[in-house]
Length: 240
Image 1 (cartoon, rainbow, N blue to C red):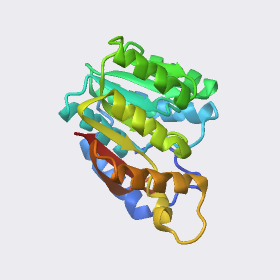
Image 2 (spheres, rainbow, N blue to C red; image 1 turned 45 degrees about the vertical axis):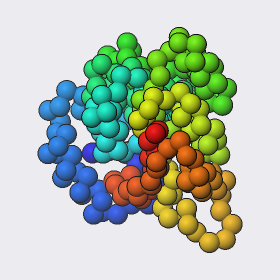
Image 3 (cartoon, rainbow, N blue to C red; image 1 turned 180 degrees about the horizontal axis):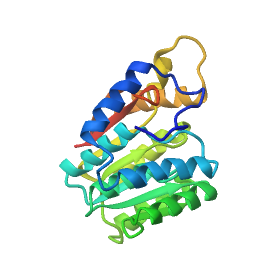
Image 4 (cartoon, helix red, strand yellow; image 1 turned 90 degrees about the horizontal axis):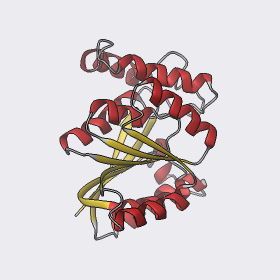
C-alpha cells in the first residue's frame, strides 16, 4: 500500500473495499521485507513533501507494469510523464537489466524524480530527459532510426491526455515487434462513456481508443481497474 497521506485528493474516486483488497494482497505479494519496498514508499513521501501532485500510479499498477517488463524480457523501456519517478523506479528495481528512458516536461518534477532515483540507487538504469514530449520524442525517434538508441520493447504513457495519440504514434515507431504500450487514465471513473459534453482529458481518452481501434499496426484492449487510488483503467496495445 501507499504511504499515509498519499492518494487523498478529492479527484480520486475510492471505495474501502478496493483499499482493503490492495492492502491484503500487497502485504502477501509485495511485503515490506522486499528490497525495493522502503525506497518506493520513500519516493511517494518525498514527492509529496516536495509539492508534487498526488497522481502517481498506485503500487499495484506499478508492480504490474514491472512484471510486464519482466515476462517480456524487456531491456529498454520508454516512459512519457515521469512525475516523481515512481513508475520508473518500479520498472528498474524489479528488472536489474532494464534501461528506462523517461520524459518529464516540468523541471521541478524532473529534479525531484532524480532525487528519488538517486536515493533508490538506480541512476545508472534510469535516464530522465526534461522537455515537452511532443518535442523530445521526435529527437529520440531520430536517434533510434540512426542506430544511436536501442528500440524499445515497453512504453508507459501517463502525461497530458490531449497528446496521447502523438505519444502513442512515436512509441509505435520506436518499438520492436511485440512492443507493449500502456496508456494510463483512459476510463476516468467511467467518464469515457459519459453522455453530453466532456473535458479535454476525457475527449483525449476517447480519441485514443477510437484511433487505436483503427490502427492496423497493433492489437489493443482497455482494462478497467479499481484500487486504493481510484477507479480508472489503461489502454494496452501490442505492436504486430
